[in-house]
Length: 181
Ligand code: HEC
Image (cartoon, rainbow, N blue to C red; front, side, top):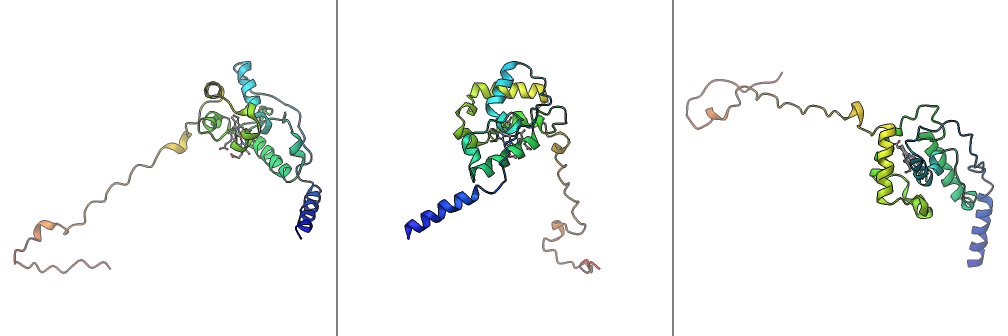
């Protein structure tokens, strides 16, 4: 029984290898890099970002083995789409978010850092990289989206709703209650 499940699993893994997604491991030509402020910045970016955000991805052996292959291929594909340090000849509209992504601990991706010690930047290295990214690309100020809407003004109290004429004087004013029609 257990043996059969084991054979089944191995068979499944073998079959998975036949799914072609993520096999190409291609590194398209490097077209243009940003104007690095200094070589150290590039070196840091290369350590922490290039595998997913450049055309110089280093593909480890396990990136050839499904199902990890699917995950890695997807990260690289998606990462390059968002930001590609090798294709600075086209607009990189997320570049100004690079410093913020590091600051918030979003990038490099946590799972990646576990397997790539060299991408686990020290606090000093992170600070340096953030400062350089901010000076090279600007820092996300959330541009025009950030202006919060003015808080709603409280509408004026409807007339006739004044508590002061409600203190028990026994005059009756013949007003019928307002009738919203
Ligand atoms: C393991 C792959 C991987 C690594 C390493 C990595 N990223 Fe990413 N990055 C992604 C993926 C995938 C996306 C797109 C999905 C998302 O935004 O989470 C992304 C998105 C981004 C974005 C766009 C965010 C947005 O809101 O659209 C920026 C900026 C970014 N990464 C910067 C960096 C920087 C800077 C580094 C290095 C310090 C880095 N990334 C390292 C995979 C990676």
